[in-house]
Every structure is written in structure tokens, then in C-alpha cells.
Length: 108
Image: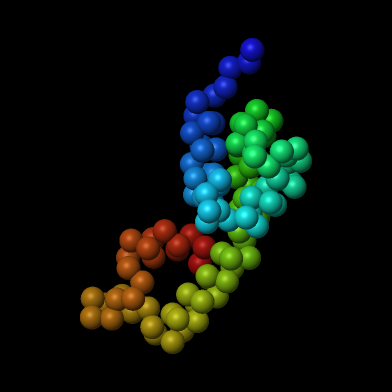
């Protein structure tokens, strides 16, 4: 019986948890795309299929491709707000917190 990599299991679990996999509010569109991309035979066994057959870096790269339109939209919104001077960095007008800005600045 092949052993599984606990690090990979944790990464896949974290990714699926962030998509609310198996929950009422799961991101069905992304889950469906992942099932299609990786030829998952049974949607209910997505986790096991990803752990057993998919390299995590490939999974992560595909996920980034899926969410790219959303990321692009956020970049455009943030750019618009910055152009309108609605994202001032002064404490009096702080709308986008510095902790959030540092997390999204890689997309800008």
C-alpha cells in the first residue's frame, strides 16, 4: 500500500477548505472546474483523487488560472479607487488597510 505525503494532504485539505468543499456554501464553479481539469471520476472523492494523482504545484497553478479573472477584476477596481484617491494611506482616510495592501500588492 503506497504511503501518502502528510504535507501534501495538509495542502490539499487547506485548499479545499478555502473553497468550502463539501459545505453548503462551497464554491461550486471552481470545484467543478477542478474536477474537469483533473478528470475526477467521482466528485465526492475529489480530495482523495487530488492527493493520489495530482502534483500539488500543478493543482495550485491550475487554481491560479481559474481565479485569474477575479484577480484581474480586483486589480482594476483597486486601480480605479487609487486613481480617484479613495485609497489614501493616511490614517484619517484609510480604506484599504496596510495589512491587506501588502497581501494584494503582488497583483498590482
